Image (cartoon, rainbow, N blue to C red; front, side, top):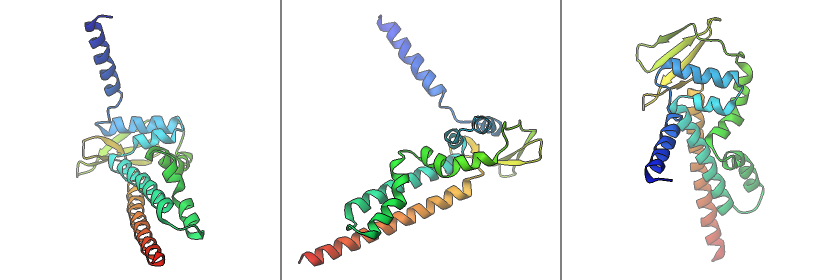
Length: 192
């Protein structure tokens, strides 16, 4: 294979990969991504259709659960509390991605409540802030979409719940850290 052909193949592959990773730049494009996820009954694709802040919140939840799980394994003494806390954080820690965690905890249930196939939007209404928009379906159901800090758009119906879960997960990992420090202090006192 010639050098020129090799370079052309690499460039072509990169453009193809990057082209497939584009995020929606309009509410209509975000709706199309959401519509496809709902119609295909795909909870992981529903995660991909979320607004950026909601996806970030779920990434924080998953990371916090993994961190809490690791701290508990390393620092909590054997016993009932350790086992209870391990069970509490195990799924988030072991699923491996925020996408999988969202799909399991919220996505499947949410898809069951949405009409299939998802009808086309009749119109899009932009909020006065320019950061929020609503797609209006033939049934007059209004679906919220939100612009992310990077200009991409996504489905925002889970925004408040996602941000609340993020706050709770961050608080939980702080409590686990504090408890682990208490256990370490107690263990060092008992070792004297």
